[in-house]
Image 1: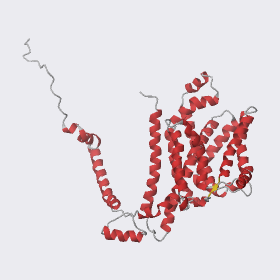
Image 2: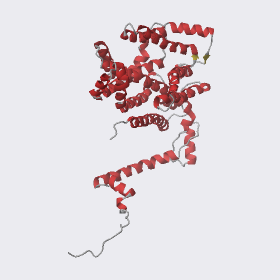
Image 3: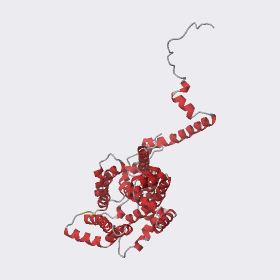
Image 4: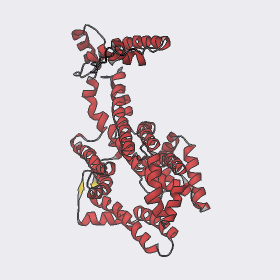
Length: 431
């Protein structure tokens, strides 16, 4: 055998890969031009994108933001842009208050603004576990405070509503020893009776003794983005607990409870939301005592909540069905009763599994608030019709619809991003 005449004692320095195998060129070759079919699709997509942007971008870049009428907007366009296509967003700057607040009195705009700011304070302990838990007290108070700020009137009416929950709690505590089911039923019925009959008389008496009130605003003055937030947030906050109760009721061993929940869920899911809204507008008062004045916004909130709760119940039932039976057996082995097992073991896991579907229902509910236009409540989309009906802005379309779409997209996208963050935070099955 011949001996080696040379053995290298040091490593050669590393060389960069070829230009076609790194960086942007590598990414384009892999994702855009990996084969002839993808190359053709990429070229067609680039052409379509260029054709669209070449028309849309000048329209946006030449936007006009200051004008009192559409005619004035077009005159400015002809003078400054030589007749080039231009968006007339002056309609937004000129009518933004109506799009946001509806017909709410201008000198009281501070009230919905304060309510909107306080909404984030109230949501903070619900959405983030790093916020002090003591803030939950404000979260519980906020719905009543928001109603008082938006609608105004006597503060005693607000306190009478809060007192109704106290009546229900006292009735539940008093009857728990007799029968749990009876206690739950009475806890729901007692506040309703209190709100329908004695609360108004007691509130009026207290107001005559100690008058504390702010200027009242009728529901017909509400509109724009404000009414969408009120209906959307109320529906979201109320439909989740009601959906949980319906999901558990559908799986109950008590036939009466089970079939009542099944009947409710299947009926609501089989009826369009617009039908329920017309029911809220026209029929709900027939089931109330004569002379009762039931606010139309409250009626809409009730129907929207019931509609979303039916879908929420099925989503949560799917999450419960996805849990392995070992979780139920583990709860039994720890000696937990039904409600303890649901609160500590079963329901947290079912809700975690159902987060994407739950947020999807929330997003759909918030977007469905635009349907109230059909029962005479002018939310943002409804106000676009009112603005275009004015001779000053007759003929304008895209600018208003783009603004409304952008507002809803920001809200819905924020909910989507939060749900994805929450899913990552709760992820426990790391591999």
